[in-house]
Image (cartoon, rainbow, N blue to C red; front, side):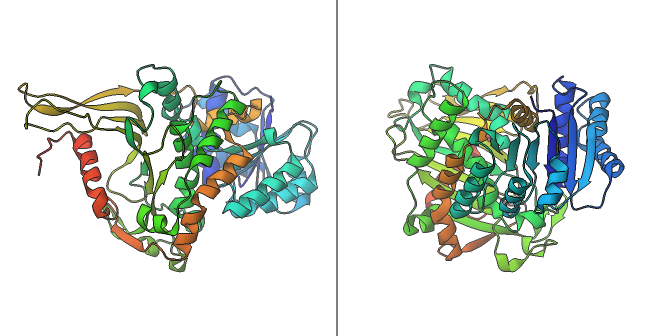
Length: 475
């Protein structure tokens, strides 16, 4: 097991909010011994004492769920090197040593090729591993080039393209619910399922992340990686095992089966928008274009939606809708599996049976099954919901991923061909949006997002009825 992690971009938000607390969780769970070392590297002119002081402050802020001993140990493990990640000599000073090191590139994707080239020139100890945050490249061509550079540096099994969504309890439970319950798997196909909606709507606005977000946008930041990964877990064929080869082979099969969108499809099956000024609760939110650090000329979207279909025996005829938006009026983070309606209702005209929906809530984590039941009389139908809450995970998502990196288990990382296939799926959307085939719409901060197309209105109403528990004839 690797006992040394070098983080490039160590003074950024990712390290503060996720990596440091994840290490504290691993220490508290007994996975990090006293020999473990964290080397932070960045352009900041800090020394080890300054970095340890900063790390201790961030752990007190973001890692309060973990014991003080674990937080203090992680801060004590830390050291710092000022380094330019594109300079091989600087990189060599960070990774120097005989023991293998896990190199974590907590960097913007545009820097990945330069950092990997510098690592190649610097050399890595035998058995070292490379960790890259999503998105993996900026388009299909850059993903292919990045994979070529990585292949010249370390074996594919030593490359960890991490996506923390894959380590979330509810995401793992998508597979558990499907594959461990006989009542579900026979229904898990287009004969019974009309639509799968994969949604990450959040009330959070830009929150000072313009330096990263304005160069990426919702499509690349969320849909191309997180939401496509969820699509893979929902739609994949049952793997022989959950080992890295079987699991990742089946995920690649799903991406390969996605029908590529034509220009006509891009116009009619995708939406993009960005928020204008508004209010979220008691908080006034400026328009996206007025946020500090945003360049309006980039025309970056804060809302993206794509409808996909799979050309496969299991899923032909089912729509998969992937959607993510910022600064919306309510958080909705879930995978909603919507079943087809029953063929006949013998209940007269009092009430209506809405489609059954199985919801995997991602944050907070839980599971809900929306049903229709009998109301006050035998002729009255009413919505019912069965809800289960997940047990708190033993490790946070980033803790699980870091442990996999140190142990060398790549099952939950993205394989090189999988990363390329994900870009292939969205390449027509990127081209269409760059050519302005789809207008940039707007929505007020704190709203439900851009107005749906006419053909979506009924579906959106069905969602609201179930979410709010209202009768079908509610105003």
